Length: 570
Image (cartoon, rainbow, N blue to C red; front, side, top):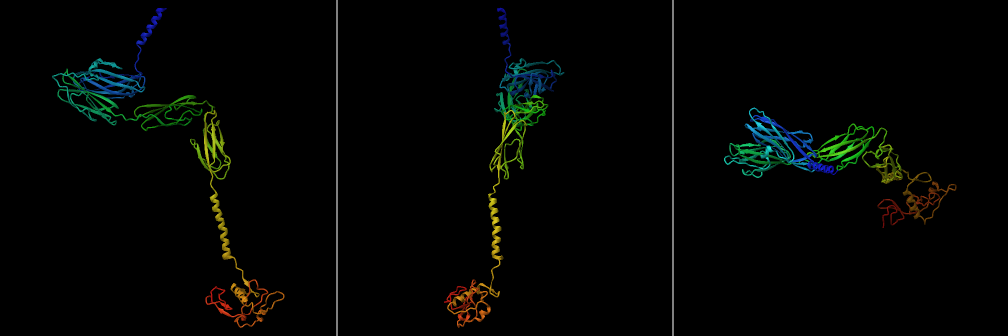
């Protein structure tokens, strides 16, 4: 029994010893190249890649290295396109061959950063190619992953293993860049350089200037595509079989691509969610009649792309709708909505929304997403309000719809069928102010009544006309004159003849009655307007007469003031 336990423990120890403890992300590369090529021709190698674990976020350095009879290389590699587990074509390398001989190509991914934060130190792949007149030979392909190195390419690593021959010059005279500035300035004994270019610089050319006509330069590029970030190029200078020198140039392409992968809004044609760009999972329910959704997902940045999946052909029960937002730089953010399609006949229970509010005699202008309203009404103290719920099983209550005044608030409070949700809709009442109208109307009515009355009394109503016993008209001046004469004749004896039946002085009696008075020079009678009947008559001869120098009226008794115009006479 003890022996069996011992074997079991040893088995566990051996299992852990061989357990792979690599980082969560791991990249493997492969090259597909011709085994052989003719001199001074162009060949193309395909690059394949696969990964395990997290997606790739960035690669610090990505570069090919040539040696031997392989002279120039241009390449394009998209490491974002590397898929999980299976090898996938992610780019190409175009190689210019030189003279007859052999050479090798090595493709290096240096410092691979993954989205989950892990880092792979290095991934590389090398391949040997024979250059001969026939262009045919068997090739050797070695795949290296992780931090392992390739024995066939030990002389082309990142360090500068310069081997010089005292009889041959392998120094360059200069290095020329199509874009950017070489830093530091070129010196033949400085072997590492860098240059920065803007994000809009998509390609570059690098040329080595020979210091000796017998030099052979490998690694020069023309219109080489640049990845964002660091791009490493190596110029390998040879001058004879045993001499070699490597100049390294790192071109850093500025990466100002936007990394924003958020949505600014998210809405559904059916069902409801409370969207927030930092909330990535939602749940909603739709009726049985809804078998697909229309989803409007708007990214915060116009440079981002949005992909919606799972919104069609909804099955009864749970469905997952995924909205994937990809930034300009390649960052991704996923939003998920669990959509439950109800069975036939089932009703939604968590919907407290109103579908419409109808007020008799008025147009409220109801909006599904609006909760505050203002309504101008007439004189009503109460409104006839009808509410249509989005879910017929939901309930509502109307508060404040009595004794309506200017500024009153009517509240419509809703509650879902399962009482898990509620909403409040407010309607502010406005009534017109009639006080000003009443004042204006009162003034107008007053004017329409008073003005005609004043006009009537001033211009229309006939004046009272006085007449004597014979029907002759008597004006006010005659009456005043007669009163004045009577006042002067108070000391003069008078006699009158009266009509016994009427008590009125007759014209004949007035004529026949004469009183001799040397002071009166004409016949005139002083009659009071209220004393035309049954009054004593004074003869004109009883009083003296004169005229007013201003108004020309006749004056009786030599008065000091004219009784007609009030002019002082003396």
